[in-house]
Image 1 (cartoon, helix red, strand yellow):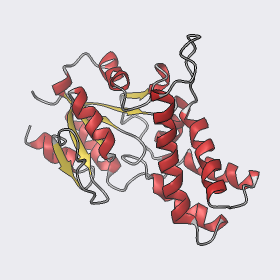
Image 2: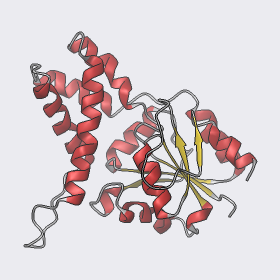
Image 3: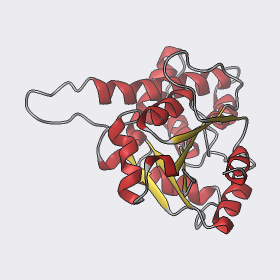
Image 4: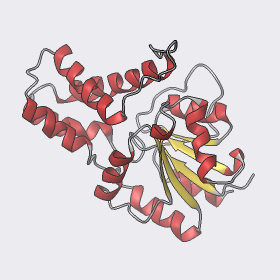
Length: 232
């Protein structure tokens, strides 16, 4: 089917989660890289624990933390794990920076071209609405995305099928008319299983996941979106 909408993951795809390394290095010399990697890994682990292992099913309540809260708790864990002093002012500085992560250099040009082409564009993210609004504004992307879709609406994180289904609640399209773009291999796989056409932006040159189908497309940066659409 012809692609009519492009939906982007946010963290790692549009916004560089490892750009936090620079500020972390300033506060913890020699530990910036380790902090950025462990922080990200623990953040994603916590989203999966909350979605898959609800500790209160008997009483009907749904345990949930926003992605912002998870991000802070993952940072706390990381600093504790690395045996680093968890100073309140440093934690606040790192969290402020996380709300304004650096975008990847090709992003704006790609989004501007998609707007000119008249395609519907959106973000589907674990990020809370406030996080997404802040990141988009800081990156100069305001006005280039039609929808900022947060899983907060359903209190389930990716890769739950319910999270991907949020896209069609905003866009009355068939799954195969939607190109889902993510730099996270697990996210690309979840979206492929859901039925979207998918582009895995493999910025780090990682191997394919060894379970499930491969993404529809694979590229090294976001510009691959334009190549796909040119041949669509």
